[in-house]
Length: 188
Image (cartoon, rainbow, N blue to C red; front, top):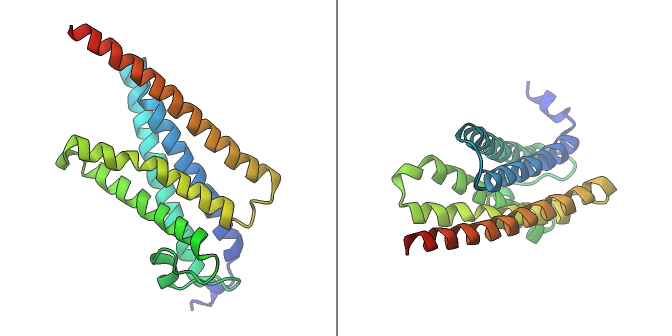
């Protein structure tokens, strides 16, 4: 009855879901940074926030599917132990461990966002800022462990996504600094 599962093109699905999860995580990070820029109308901010949440949650669930398929894959199967325990994989333990840490990071960020009203604001912000290192972990996992990284457009997409996030973070830091100074000046 379950033999049909073994007939699935799991290796292709693993690669596809890994890339899709990364691109959704990228979209979630970009939308999250964009949401924090000043000047949006409340309606636009609401749309950005909903898209940010949808991309992030979808990316996490697709990432879980990516990992689950590794257990049934016949080309390079992983055990649950290798998937759930960082750096325990027999194949490329460091790179695959980074993927496990990225998955845990995504899960913690999403869970604490759901619990946001029950957490102290500063605690939530510190945890939510972990989305940036989580993004870098997912990027490193994709570059180091992704068998499609050698494909030109995929490698280029990794470079472009990292550059976009970096530029947005720099712009946000600059705008945040200016806004903080203007806010402080208004208090005098």
